Image 1 (tube, chains in turn purple, red):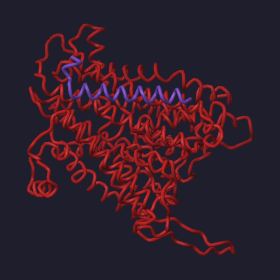
Image 2 (image 1 turned 135 degrees about the vertical axis):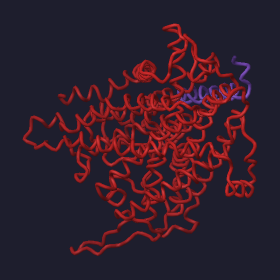
Image 3 (image 1 turned 60 degrees about the vertical axis):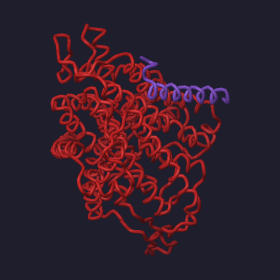
Image 4 (image 1 turned 180 degrees about the vertical axis):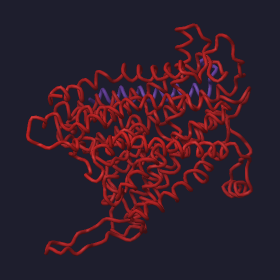
Length: 30
Length: 558
């Protein structure tokens, strides 16, 4: 269960980082 | 017949009010700064003349929301030391306070607490009530920013968040709420800062305590802002929160009023009223089948009781207020889940399996038909972006929407925005199935119905709806914390890519329509859009629905 929490937490944090990069550095994703 | 007439009257009145309101809102968002506004912004230190880029807009939204959520949390924790607490309520449990703060900040308004016995009047009004206004206004502001992005050419900015927020609150939500609160007070909804009233009964029992407070003001904005968080634990099923059939009609009307009107606002702002109507038709086509399903299922009673000598001519009335009946309850359940509102006038847990399936699926479709104020329409526009891209792949059309080319960047952001709530719902539900708390204290039922209770809870929180299935105790550690995180992710992990798309689209030129352009205000586009929404929803949720309401329907002999 704890592993599941960690996976979900890391995934959502990674997604946030990706989204912030997309927002602030859109040229990196184009 | 009665159900059909009710729905028709509802639709006619709704449309009659939404058209002028939509035009009014378009004027509000496009008007130059007035004298009052200039003074207000000067006092608040806002440079209203300076517009925001997509990223500045997003940062402003996030900072404003984080601060609001922290404030709501703190007010709940210290309410015992603050005035406006005539019933001497103590501090709210930290897990519940966290869940509630995120819930109201994200416009979800999921309630892991009983309002009348947990929150002081000050917290109800200054924390929850204020968030009801500003979280709704945030959704509207993000929609307006995205709308401007479709219209502007080679622009770096998409509007000023503080101006959009202020205008949504002061010129739209506040006046409508005042009018509605007065109507509700006239119908018998309490509005007072006094403590609980005590009634001496004729029988020689203990006196009855009647919870009252600033109810009417809370109920008005909870419906208009698609918030849904009620003053009372049983929400709009409570006779003091929803006392008469007229109050019920007005509240039900208020749920969809702004989401529908915003379609007309969008049409006016992009200078294509047909486009706004096309989006409204798509939303309606998505909702009507589930309205028919839920109304039909509830009108036909519980199939498990059909072999017994029980009169079910009035439909399945378990968990429903007899004064509203099956038809009004089914209409409300559909409207409140379609609109990301989440208030209830009956207990969805007691619906028949198919009757409960309708509200559940409407949330799982991503709250885009009609969705929350602002968030519903920007969610549907995200689907529209994916839709025109798919049309481009399938029939060789140029992927463009309202003259703006849809490219890889927009598609990446749109795909993430669509998949985030799906992940929040499914991962949250999967985790809940592993936790002891679910089986020991949370669930009222086990088997397929119990699974539906969990699936419903995360479908509600993971799509910022907020309605509860009623059979689940959600104040435990797991549901309060993981649910809070799911609500947080489902709101802001969508707003960020939406504003990223807005910033990108605003910078693009407008391409004139050509032979390769798919008209986005015609029936083909509407069908395509509805198809994309249904397909994403079906691919994501049919397996989980099969384990819950579908197998339950088969088990009860439906």
